Length: 314
Ligand SMILES: [Zn+2]
Image (tube, rainbow, N blue to C red; front, side, top):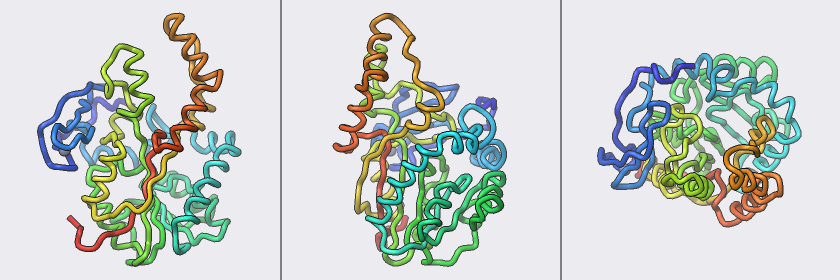
């Protein structure tokens, strides 16, 4: 997929509105900047919303280098690992939610919904891709709306839990979505947000230092599909601006599926780099650091449980 030919639009910081920013790097022709006022890292020039929406509704899940090529095949092949991830999610949801009516925004093929539905949750999904939402309905028998959350005909205050997993960083208008989620949550409902922590994460800083670069300049995933590169503090601030109060914080780690699909290269770079990669990936240093990082909220997945706050809607 040729992302560089997408129609472009410029944007200011979505968190504080400032246009003052510092260029960190240019990735695949897209400028990654850091707001000098609030610290949000984002693409100051991004694909126009309509172009991205069209793309998500067509090829994203089966085509190109930033989507989910062969996602169903991957799910089947690494079923055991997916089940471990879903089981952990299920356990966390039981701990944080007060009811069982659950909506997943951006549910893709519906595998998580299917898992939860079989364990007593009353599940629905919204998914922009006709391909994957049709799969969720026909193969898994799920109630999944094709399109955006705004276009889905859903009853107000009818969900105890709304999942927003790996979605927020893709949205041109995150506050519109958060406003709609507030409408759909029951009075004691909870929003679960998960985003990757890519830039200025300890692993990225270490890699940058190792390669003689400045932190924040390593190529993040999925440019230009990801429009923002959240850190815990900026994600919390976006949720607050969207009218939510964070009531619990959790840390996770991405990458277990990816490392199965594409095992990390060991024999790359100079001898020192090769030796370091061997120690990190093969001798278990990475596994130990990831484990420790989760415990101190430094994993590369940021998870937040948030509840609507009265009179905070912006
Ligand atoms: Zn800002």
